[in-house]
Structure formats: C-alpha cells, structure tokens
Image (cartoon, rainbow, N blue to C red; front, side, top):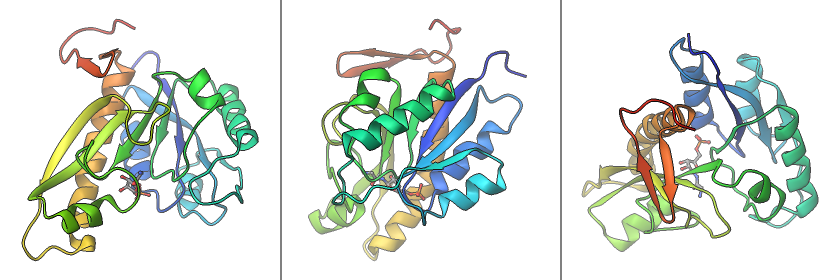
Length: 213
Ligand code: GAR
C-alpha cells in the first residue's frame, strides 16, 4: 500500500479509454494515485459510464461554446470541483477544449495532456491523419505539461509508433492507443512519486530517486 495517494482529476470529452486505463491502474495496491473525480464538457461522453461503473464521482459542466473553446466561467467551475476534491494533478484524457485561465493559474505544472503524435509534430486535431498525410514513417504519442500554448507545453514522455504502408487513420490509432495508455500511466506514476522535475522546457526524470516533492 502507498501511504499518501496523489489525487487525480481526470477531464475527458469522449470515449475515455485513457481514463479507464488510468483508473484501472489506480486500483492496484502499489499505484501511488487515485482518481478523485471525472469532469466532462459533454453530457453524452461514454467516459461517464466508465466513471459510474468504477464508482468515481463524475461532473458534467456542459459547454455550448464553439468547438475547442472553454468559457472562463466553465473553467472556473471545473477548477472549483478540482479544489473541492483536493486534486493534486489534472489529467486531460481526450479533453477537447483549450484551458486558458483559472485552471492554469491554480494548477501550474500540475496539468498533463496526452496527444497522439510525437510533438511538436502534428499539433491540434486529427494528429494521426496529419501524420499519414505528411508521410512520416514514425509517429507515436506524447504526454506533456499543459501551458497557455496549444499542445506546446514541456514534454514529459514520448513513445514512438511506426507507420505501416497500408495504415489507415483507424489502424494507426488502434496501435497508438495502447501506447498512450502505457505512457500515460507511467507519467502519472512518475508525477505521483515526485520524480518529475520541470526545468524550463525540459522535464528531468529522476527514475530511481526517492520522493522529493
Ligand atoms: C486520445 O488519442 C488522445 O491522445 C486524443 O484524444 C484521444 C482520446 O481517446 N487527444 C487529443 O487529440 C488532444 N489534442 P480516449 O477518449 O479513448 O482516451
């Protein structure tokens, strides 16, 4: 058993496979984190069903603003929920809106995102499609800290995925997804064990050290 668990606030707009993978990892005795709450902007998100089945408190903060935008009031409401649950780390898991205000101020260097490409290549939407269209031979996934840029925060972990000649967007995503799950779980563990040390754009990883933060 781990003494003090890191409280996660997971944000998901859609299917929630990353959310499920992290929530399941959290159920293991040796995992140093727990999911304190799920927050979604989408009342129809399948992630809500996952939260229900795992008995994780879930909150819908419906957002009618244009795709990608998150109005300041909604962001404040989400921040209040996280503070109320003593969240230590916010985990964006397919959350398709851009944070700008309250959350970034309160949770500086405590918000992570997963993106389905090797950043800084193929930022934004449809990253796997962009990689195929560009013709790269290797893509992958990136976990990074979230800052005021879009998909531009300091990189924590990356995992490569080779592109095959006959790949479609779906077949490629099918291979990226399991790598995302593994990479995200590892990044959350490293954070929870105090092993991530952001220094400007570089995040140093103390792979074997004891908890220092
Ligand atoms: C994941 O592939 C994640 O990398 C992507 O959304 C998917 C969510 O899947 N996020 C982005 O593209 C963010 N720019 P999931 O709902 O099954 O976890």
